[in-house]
Image (cartoon, rainbow, N blue to C red; front, side):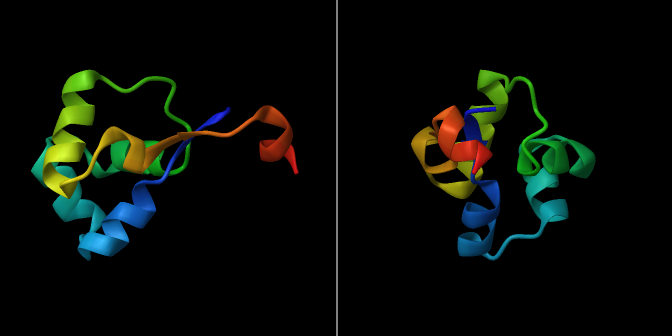
Length: 73
């Protein structure tokens, strides 16, 4: 999948645990893991807004596009 979610980077910068993050944005830790591991097929805008609010970041800080050829190498 050419969209990469850099949630780990932002969580590390904020020194926030997955459990604390999940509680703050209102989703389960299992769903946070789905996001972190790149297995998510979609993200609701309300969830994206909550992520950005809690982490004090922009969507581009956690989402990036990687061309298919780079991802495979």
